[in-house]
Length: 128
Image (cartoon, rainbow, N blue to C red; front, side, top):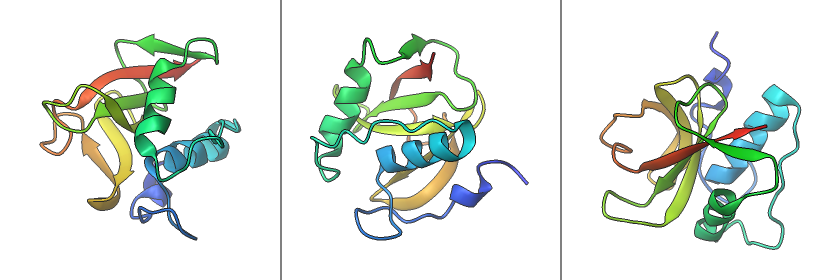
């Protein structure tokens, strides 16, 4: 079974048994890497834009930008093709697919060229 299979289908949300996009990244890192990523406790989980921006702006917390993603890198995404701000994150399952969850669906794995995210990915971060 693929390592990401247990996460597929997890519901989006802020309630019990639900995950935001950053919550999914945190769970994957805790389960698969044994790393407890920050919860950004000062930022409400309902304010996903601020969470994603905090992730994108991270300079000294161990994340580094990479141009070629690999499994467990974090994909930074904007809201749409025309949007400029990073508002969403996902976890790369390999160099061509991302696991993510958002209000439009439960957690899914899609190719980075899939119409639902094509043009939205603005970069990748790897935990050093």
